[in-house]
Length: 292
Image (cartoon, rainbow, N blue to C red; front, side):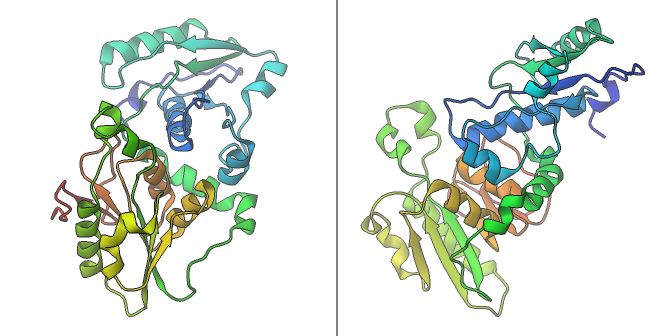
């Protein structure tokens, strides 16, 4: 049980109260999912029900299916609920958490939806894996999924984040901390192929942006398929469905990793956490697998 759940506010009243977070409309889908997950997680920790706020893109909203079965904030407002903003708090601070609990207690028996401050942090993120996997795989949109993976092959997806961080490399700290070299990914891929145990044909799908010549180091790997022109949603989908997913220091591949039921090969130093599970394989900055 979470140590915060022990201090959850237990309500005997008939009025149900809700908690939520706003997906940042100015951010990418990985960032928005982190916001949504934080709201979902903290609702549970404070003993409240969760209220859904849609993602900024209706296509992603339908694709993910996270809002299915959840009341929306707009629906609750129509039912007479009002929104109360919760200030940003440090998730490991007992003092901050006590303040939030005090705010919630002050509205006992009121029709309230508590709304996190924008970009409220929740480091681990994986605490909601079971719930979001269930939502994602049961979403009606799954019937429209179309994969290029070869049937009966063992599919390895590798996400090499480039695009915006190429322009920002050595200029913006936030971009620099996300940068991993081609040499790093080459080493990770080689080590991953060494430990894969399968009799199937192994296909490698490289998801990134740019020209193939920018990834010439990878051309020596057999059965390599470049996916450089694939759209964001299709790339995301393939990463969730791969037998092995090699991630970048990026929310855009970390979130598919949370939804992926296969093996995830991930950089140890990242701003979100990983579950202690054999399906999560950590690698160091040198690209070598860290032995448990």
